[in-house]
Image (cartoon, rainbow over all chains, first blue to last red; front, side, top):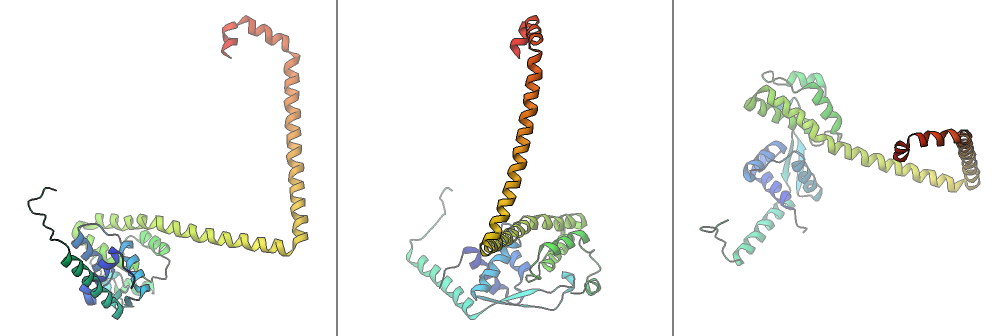
Length: 110
Length: 156
């Protein structure tokens, strides 16, 4: 399958981590906490849209929620292919790390 | 969804986001609310309200409007330009279809334009010549003025 971009990978993983609460706001919050950087809404919508078009995610609208001013959430879920993509991603990372020399930054000046 | 229903279901503890900003965002995100943008904005608006107070939250909400603006404008420009391209294509096709009539039309248009431009050119030429003639008739006086003030004449 085609390789995903970094932001797509991160969003995909965040969707899997958040499970039932995987809509834009918590995904953005999660990524901001993890990376320590500012993520705009657009930088979440875009990968979500692309992943959905690639068939790795599916989405549905919930009932209206009062904290959202009576608007609904669009909750994302991993499809079977999305799960496969995540597994493959981890596999590639692990095999590459396993064959690479160990990387220790301790005692080294940056 | 119905606006009144929204008002009803909204939490009363936190004031609504600025009405005008909300309207602008609604106008700018023209995807049929596919992404439920406005809900996302409002949810984070409430979080900001609890953390940083009403002023900061209102500011944040307005900031979203301005951050949406470039993308919105680019999108509009893209689609407007592509529609313009379609108009040009349609015009060209019609011109090819009615070849002789369009030739006559274009010929008429260009000859009209040419006549107007030629008349204007002749008119300006004539008025300029009249100016020069008027100047030359007082040539002796001009020379005298220049001699009376040599330094100023050189500066000119």
